[in-house]
Image (tube, rainbow over all chains, first blue to last red; front, side, top):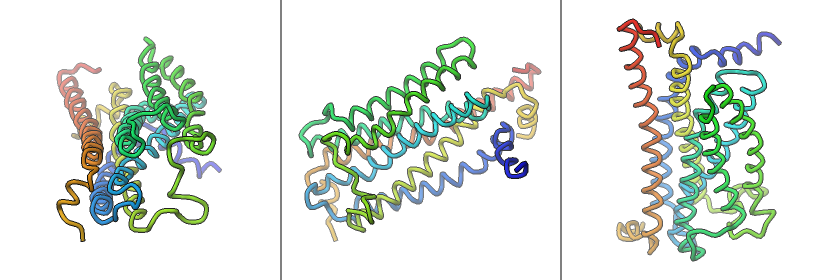
Length: 248
Length: 56
């Protein structure tokens, strides 16, 4: 039991995590570049136009990965903030702080690309529909988390208050996911993973899966860099940072 | 095989598809460059302070 937890304790150590993140980030970066280039070729050129939506459907190749990351990002934010709150782990708070602006930017991207798809398909850039509204609320939750963290003179109090807010807001993630099932939404239902297999053609699906993998790797690379920055800010007076500066 | 014209006009959806990809490109580029630059700048700043003997 003791041995199996050593990796977890090591991850909680800022200097260890700082070096690990620095080594891993470029690998995720290159992986994302390869996947995104392949996904763009597949999505914009190779995949045939949709029989109903023509070439307008190609927006999904950025919309779906962004929307997925907006929810995964928030879940990661709330879970790590919760771990920081309960076990007072510094690294967990650093992860939550690092993921917030990144997750917010993908939420913004999901909303903008969805809006650009909605105009030709629905006839409107925006509708106060369950899926769209709950996603917009998610964007405000990211903003709320960022703002509340900085609203206290003592950064530790800010972290705690923001963590509670993040955990309460976690309820929005399943609401977004099931909104198309629970309410009669304008937004179309899930087509990728419906029951057994998928409802979309392979030539359209494969580029989408590649784009999801590419965006996820991109998110990981950016997140690792942001965690490094976050750790450096918190630990700037520590001995290991001084050693790091002397080595560099 | 589709033509370059079809690709550029996106079958009439160019006004929606290309701006969507443009915004995505901007968001990805900013995310890709900003943290690395900030990290580099902060490390340089800490190093300068260290050399002057002022521990932050």
